[in-house]
Length: 208
Image (cartoon, rainbow, N blue to C red; front, top):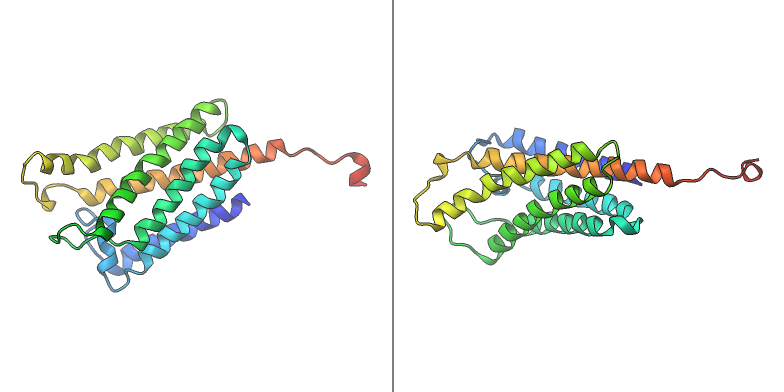
């Protein structure tokens, strides 16, 4: 079952990479959400839907163990947020915030928080496991870069005029997304490994 999650992650990543190649926009200053305004912008919700499918599969595997259900819920929320981000496009630059843009923005913020928290929960609970350290580091890196994503909004709210050319918003956003997809993939490895260890061999008579 976890293999389906890996396949969805791979397909989602390939679709996202294809979107970047065919549009040719500046990845340093252009945030991913703005790719939806391009001719091939339909690739963006497709990629996000594939990531949501992967989160659903991996979250379902995690939910089989009672001790991991809180983290599984967070992974499921992340997947739901991916669907909302794709279904409700952001506003074009310079346009006042609309309902669609607001849903898009806050769903993204919730997603950026839930995946690293889920990773930290599982890394702590299964600290002796082979993937715990990598999951912890990726989760902390995601939260650290998230601070850089939010900082420009805080600066603008403080009344400082900060133009888009002044900050590498595209870089910081892509780092957060990359770290979080990596956390999801590592959670899949952890879930698959734990499921493999919990399987009991059939009795000799049954195997015969």
